Image (cartoon, rainbow, N blue to C red; front, side):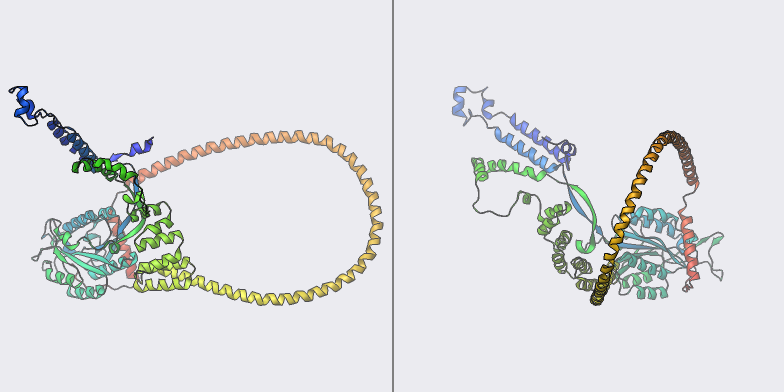
Length: 615
């Protein structure tokens, strides 16, 4: 009996293939209704002469091949449609593509040599980049005379897109242009995220010659590449102001121009590319090409999984095999029962599941079901096999398999396996190798320090145990001396006890007389107590009834107070929601206050600003 759950989940992954059954059915019906040539001549030729004039005219045309062809077509169409009703867990790989977008918010970005302005075009381009990045981490930094982080590295692109339209030079606390400070922040973001490789996209209209040298020194010998998107034109345009255009100290109108050659040279020195901003996405595709490295280098396996529908279409291909045999030669269909019933003399390690799933797929399924030991035997990849052995508790085998690769991650995993196996010294050496390749690996540094502390504790415990052994020997000697002293005292006490026993026997006789007198007085007091106990019971019952009434009244009062408090709290929540709705959603105000606070903190810390133009 088919379970209801299977019926509810049954569907086709590619249902459009079912439309192929319609033309096949029409074609078979067309040929099915075609009459033979002998039937067409029966109206003109005598039936007695027809057999002699037409070869095979009296024979009927076989129609069963058309039915078999239609059946094979229908089975193939259903198989291509992908019937499914079950799911298989699939691991999720996350891209290690870290991108930091650095936006120039100096006053020169207000120039209108490209419409509507350099700033508006730059903000629209950032939104296009965020819309195209469906994987990896993205950060946004804005700079003028000082650099500030708008958003750290995150995969929440909609939040960055919500903050981008609010960026403008008017919200920056210090005017100027300091791309070097912005790139220092970008480098710090990569380090905080543990990314040894990353890309920086600088969107600007120009940098100074001193900035070029400082940026080259900052990014040299690092794993970060710098690509630049130029905004503006070589002719430039004046900067709009409240009263006309922005002027310098001499009263001349400032016309910032795009410094294309200098930006091209800067990008070339830092393993990046340069392109002018464009109306289409050609500039983004050129500056930020999609990474095409191998899976192990470009992605990292996450702890999350998702379920993928298991395509059962290949199972229907078995139903086409008998029809395919009939297409070659008649009589081959009779050989199938012999093939099924025949038993080979030699046995092989082969299962029915091997026909439909690769060993890695079977291992992933076993690992998802909690059978790590079976998964370790099925995995072909050494890293997956090592992870399965680690989960199964085979830490020695896991450490050996992790050691087959000379990467920071492999050494870190090997250190974890050795630590689980109790080999602290070897684990510390593995963590040292991982830190030698990636000094910023915080997990390896933390585990190493933890193991060193455990090792020190073990050494201290061993010392304490040796000290306790010496103290125990001294205690034994002291106890022997005390036993000898106690033996002498017991002999003296025994003599005194014999003399005391006679006096105790005389005292016991007097005590028995006193007990008999007390028993008589106690019987009289029990009768008086019985009469008083009945009155006390009645009083207790009355007191209990009064207490119960008081407790009920108190509970009713508490319930009434609780209901009143609930009503008040609901009213307060509604009032709070109405008050929050009145607060305007102003990201620019929040960023402005954030930037001002960061700028004040830097000034208090004594940070000096670099020499830079004010526009």
